Length: 255
Image 1 (cartoon, rainbow, N blue to C red):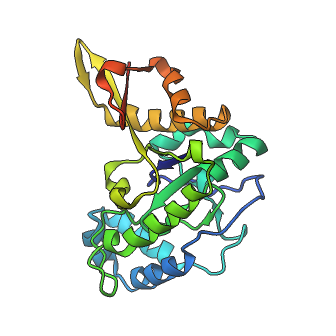
Image 2: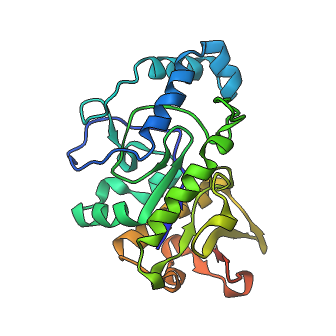
């Protein structure tokens, strides 16, 4: 069973005691994108990514400082570097070695710059959302650049799972998950939705849903879940599986 999550804009590159690490599978492709981003001026980055001048300046400097090869001296494990809402719920800094090992085999992070990351893959600071319309050669945007590569690579990961555990659990945002070609994925996909009962009306609250995606990822990792049915027992932060609101491929949890 493979869980897919999105990356985060918020990053933390303070040193960590974790030394186990791997390298991103698509680092050569990332180098191509870095070369393109290095040439962008601050105004061009601001326009391309619809960000403030201060953020454009920060990321202009980040791309200027990119160094290859990656090592623990200039990079950090993805799961420990991302610190957005999903990762607040995930609490990966509390994982022990066994948790990290399980996560490495069952969790993947989609990324605009790195394509697909395993938790212990080293990354350097960046900002490049999957929805960015960055032209790269014959590709008009990052979806076109990554789509075939990511779908093929993810299928290889899925094929290495035991047959009864060959499921893809989608805990990513729509922006990132659409980088994959669903009809070409070699496993059933279960999409997870989190809703809240506000005075009898079910609502999607973005911040809480992102945090819940992280909490469910942690629940799967720390309980070593291998089959989807066990996910229905998830009840952290008062969430409960809503059978009447769910279908075979979309499971809804409400609180």
